[in-house]
Length: 607
Image (cartoon, rainbow, N blue to C red; front, side, top):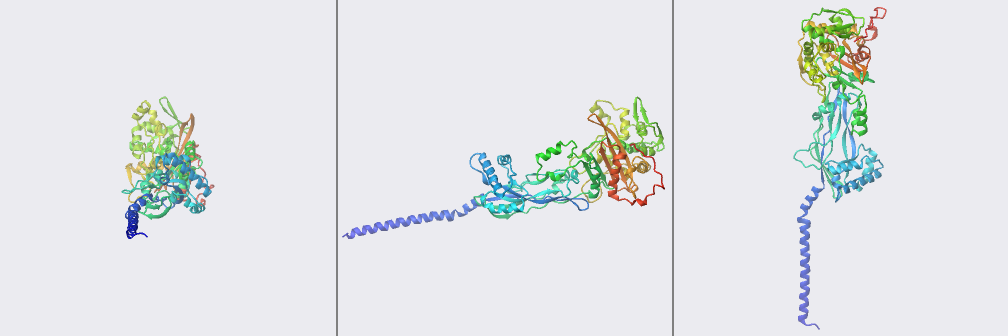
């Protein structure tokens, strides 16, 4: 039998073991409490910080309308599937992440049954640049594909769907050179916020889209997206909401713009229609044009190459950048310059078909000559000999001064991002650029709109509007404004001088080279012009018509130029007629005298 002492010793051993065991349990419990309770909030904060995407969302872009409320530029929703590459980065070299994303794109494409849109090069570029925006894998995803994606989302961490507004131009190529187009760029970061990802926003690249980009651009908002360690989305919190940009209302009239574009179809050329009362642009077109929808959602290299390699230059805005000798459409400037310098309206010149100045011979379009001809008749008949004589009589300075004050030689200031100023040369310019002195022949050539003088179609529309309204130079503009129109200059022409020139232009439309512009029920004034140019060693013609109507109280001034036409009167005058009809309409034919009542006048073919 065990002694009492032995039993007591065993009891103490058992008690000591129990005490040590209990102490161990308590220690483990305390440690577990420290991990699970005391550090819970710290771990939760760390986990939250690591699993929340802060995404900056751009505001929708403002829309663009014509003067009648017709939408010319709008937005549509595009559903996109994108990779948040930061959440998919692999340890080690960059190539590991690139290959992993590339393989995942292949796997997701197979699951969804759609072809890849994302290249390996695009993935590499995105990863290597550490771009802080989702890597767009598919855009314009249809509803059926979205439904399949929702079924497979659990297998693809770091992938999400977002809605991206895309620009759309409902009228297609209509007014393309006015509207311009958009591209995409990283938005400016929201102040005071750390952003993990940016959704790219649209920015204007050309035209009104660029000129009024700040107005059209919306205000970005923010969004927080909670994802777990595997990249699965669990919750979305909307932060500051994005705000749409302002809408822009243009001065364009869709009916007039369509008529102008239709008239130019199949030609290379340009045209502008202004309201001479305030400088509003009713229509502005360059032909050929392009469809700005081809730039959305992105400009592909193939489209860019096709448009840039096209010899007809569809991206080039001839209306504001093209430089053309104006031909006889410039003669009203020579006439008003002479009248202001005291030349009598009754002064005549004997035109025998050739103007002679020293050894220079400058032919009139009428090879038989116009005979004794005064200024108003010379405007109607577009007599080169008369205006060469007139320019030689007064010298170049008065002609330059009038043209310069109207605005030739400098940009008009239209609200477009790019505009040319043409060329209104001086003796100093010729000496510097051509290392040659100014000669009397230069003055004669410019007197009839030839030689070194170059103008844009917009400048010629502005010039025409100045003659239409009696001498006020309004700044052309495309966006409607409140208040009084902006006058750049007032010519202060004597009433009798402007009346004579306007009367001569009225005669052009009624009796002379511009009879094809006539509109039944509306009195029209016009001037035709043809300028010969050398294109690659081949002589070609740029053909013009400028016009305004109604004659007494004009509300529309037009200038159209067509490259390689036959003449202004034959090629362009019917175009101007169609444009004016779109503005004013046309009385029915029965209101006109019959062919039996009035004998037709002689056909005048010269400019």
